[in-house]
Image (cartoon, rainbow, N blue to C red; front, side):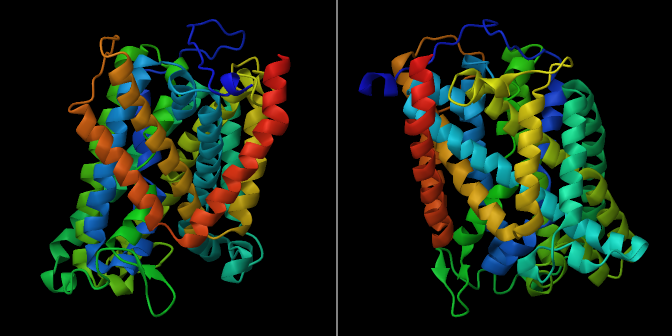
Length: 464
């Protein structure tokens, strides 16, 4: 049994009975990545980050972006070496073995489910004022219990809409996603164009009022540049959703590397511009922890029309993030079921080539989370799962550089030991910069996952 725990998976192209159709080109993948990355993190979590780091939230963005960029390079190399659905789970299964792959897959389930829920809550933060103004929807029905409401119905509703799009078809969903990504990018460009002329260096003083390392403030809130970076990290990932599309890429050798690296470069530039414009326009304390910080900044600058435009654009375009991660979650579930580590019936495809049962099941789970849990807690726990996955992929890249240095690679990460080292050590440091409660819940989640593995998944895999 101990040998089978570290059994490695062999990738045989097109050998599966349940195969996903190759319908996506590199423009779809770049749009999928940008759609996933540019979203709640910059539109909403910039306020949470400013509360933890002050104006030094700009530095938090730089640190989180650097670590994610290194992880993205590792993903690009592994995705072109192993062009199969499943992302970090599949890479771990091929390179390290089944037990580690299960832990990584279990962490990805946590990550993707919570990201979908968190973005739905962030979307609701922009939609709620509009719904209250236009349709007189009570606030109690647009917030979870911890914020004084009953249930966050807008968050649940948008999850249902996105689930319906994915059930309809992958290519159709990707095309709609590409259009909505343009809407979102234009809205952020408008924000920078309006806010940057109001830049005042006085708003950056003191630049780092809470210091660099994570520490507990007198009010019981963990603050510091790294505490903010550990939360803002949520704003940068999303390129890993591209790796889950490997089996649906028309030309994976070319399309995956363009999608992953291209979307990451674009988003780092966008984020730095928005962060500098936001922190320089008004004092960080005026938008810290706001559910719609960028729209609030524009209103404070006396630009209500621009604020209204940004809010409407966020409501229209934030579902691109939900779509990208919902898509990734369903493909992780699909691959684990196809491998026999989850019920094989979940790998059943519809006539349109989409995993219907998994999509519906995922929608039910993330809707409950979005309806009742606040954004900050969802984002922190999602980050824990992501950091585990990014670490695993970076380790896999380094192992393969040692084990098979001459294996074909259509993309090679530059300075792999430096890039991989920054990704691994940075992710570990960010993990320990997360709230202690988040670390505990992540440990509990994975202990539960190991229980499921030994009680169910292992017995099914051995029996098969």
